[in-house]
Length: 191
Image (cartoon, rainbow, N blue to C red; front, side, top):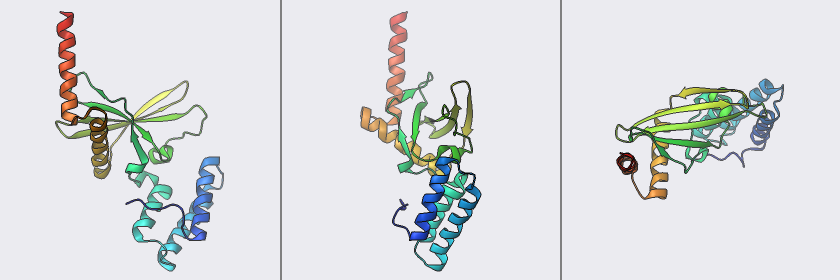
């Protein structure tokens, strides 16, 4: 379920907007803004009953405890440049992130030349998903593994399958098999 981040009670909307602005500007008052947002979520939930427990949990995880935040469909886009690895059994896909990836993965992306690439390696035959994120600058790059939650893994596998269906009108398994056949034909042509 998608929870709104606008149209909240005035005090909660104010504190959420201030927190987001503080994140963007690198405010030195983030601990205060964090406390204000935490309190406003609790007041909206407990005192005013203006939001549901699920809505409060969503806001807490996304903004206050981002490492606990589960990526959702609206947070991700599968890049159309989907590849199959050399073994022909694993699909490699880049994922565009539409959330604060730096906070989610606990990395500093504040430098002007810093960016994060999120990727998924999906074996549709074994129904296995492995993820990694690469933090890069103009002069440095570090790759880290990421273990998705069960819900995140199911979502990302489904999104990759949907993108392959949309682009190639195939299942992930058919996509891999076709890539394997293409590689076999290329090898035969070179011999």
